[in-house]
Amino acid sequence: MMLKFVLALGVALILADPARAADGKALFAAKGCVACHGDDGRKAMAATPHLAGQNAAYLLRQMTEIADGVRSSPPLKPMKPAIDKTTPDERKAMADWLALQPAAEVAAGDAGKAEKGAILFEEHGCIGCHGMDGTKPLADYPFLAAQRKDYIATQIRAIRDEVRSTRRARLMVANVRKFTDVEAEQLAEFLSQVKRK
Image: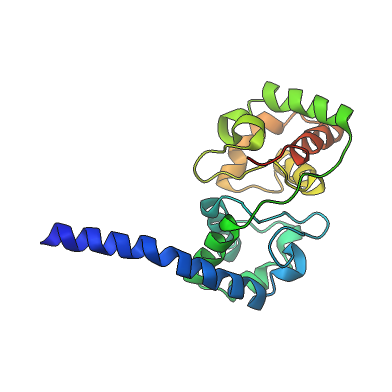
């Protein structure tokens, strides 16, 4: 009897997620997220990430780290007040909704720089966590493919310089420590041109 109850509860929670995701759209607009990330999470303003089609577990972790003050680098200061007005359930709903949205279109760019970036991605072991060409990350890691190149380059530099210094970011420092600004731009160019599968 108890097993049936647990199974029924599990099914109910799974079925509830689409409803929560639908609430996520309204919350995303009401909390002001559209101002920087666009109506559907795909038209982000400069140096701000596209969120559409991103890994829900990753999005939730980022929002939680911002709310808890774990991730607090200067570019996030404008976001903190908005996140502070959300509950954990609201953040989950927004993450679920964003994950269901189509990813941003691939940006046009410099093919030569992208080719050098592809070599850097492979040589520095990025595939281990982010998957082939940034398209198949580990469970709660971000998709990097089709992300804004200015955002990726900024984040590589922030992790390299330990400005973005969360526990997960610190795991990357050894991989990106030797990147020059030019190499960060090349890597970002490559990832921004990879179509999300």
